[in-house]
Length: 262
Figure (cartoon, rainbow, N blue to C red):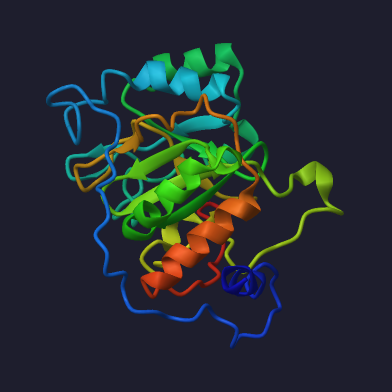
């Protein structure tokens, strides 16, 4: 019940600003390391080119219903975009119109793969799916409990060594204006350093899809057994478990400002 009460404090904007999740001492028991899907030798973190499985994994994500669009990629220790001093190199869509361009259409995806041979890809959230984005240590703590329950078993990706991305069904789409509600956890990609706890990628947000390359030299990878072919779980049970795990590590939950390009 404690986890449910803590969760309810954060589900809607306008809640009392003093109702942040209670901090707790870091968990003492050891956790098993998260193991992303294996990558070919030399592919992970390569700055010379994309993962050899990029096209295959991108097509699989589109087939799974993840609307996607080309993104920038790390280049010469900077960003492939034309923006001087890009603050989020390799982590943002190529086009400012990414929300309207995102698609699962096979022909469009093939065209993008051909015309953007080095690109990362992002998936637009809040239409067919959401993503709950948490620190890796809290995600590892929650993962065993999540995978033990078929109702919360879903796709999970490692965003480098720092974050885990839990893909879920969406809580609302632009077609469901009356049923959609904003949440204090709503987040956007460029606010990662400012908001270290749970981030809920919903409307107006996106996440990088495997096997995107990161500026750190790491990559985004599906965890073994948690690929995009799994059904999307309801977000609220997943959020409740992740909330408890984050609280054990003392992470606080904060809202984030507007998305890149808006």
